[in-house]
Length: 205
Image 1 (tube, rainbow, N blue to C red):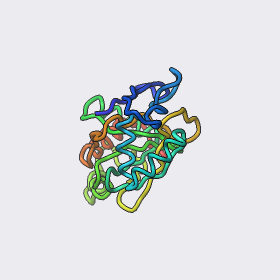
Image 2 (image 1 turned 60 degrees about the vertical axis):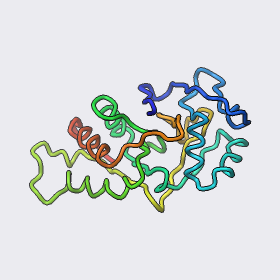
Image 3 (image 1 turned 30 degrees about the vertical axis):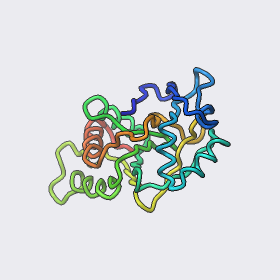
Image 4 (image 1 turned 30 degrees about the horizontal axis):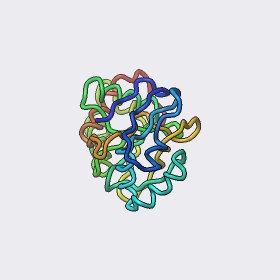
């Protein structure tokens, strides 16, 4: 399982040597770099592309460049506003099963989830928060911001393997194995509801 970075701006991940130029480039060069992908994590991401060899070749040349990867086969992605995502992570790691890889991009947090999550989570959220029954007394449903689910047919921008990004996407929890654990729709529904109940005011998308 990957480890959540309690401080979003600082962490380094050990790199296991695989004897290739790419994995050599994945070494840390300074103690100030943000979370980085391990060699095993890079292999997992490359498999998601459907053209692993080609993508690894691109990364050998530009390990500091973000790429766009398809969702639906290797992973789905759930996108929430950054502050709400932080609260979800607090619940997942403090009281729940933990999380898979997590990135930030354009003010939103991207939680990598098990394939199929994008199909099931919206209906679970609608049932839990916006069902036909009476609204709960704590008005929880009004505190849940926009939850965007990316699955089959969608694609997301994935942060660079190496290097620190200040304006573009960056990793908070970088993939570090060839088979990272990914939360499913039930775990993310639980985290969303728990996070919403701790929100004292309406969160904007």
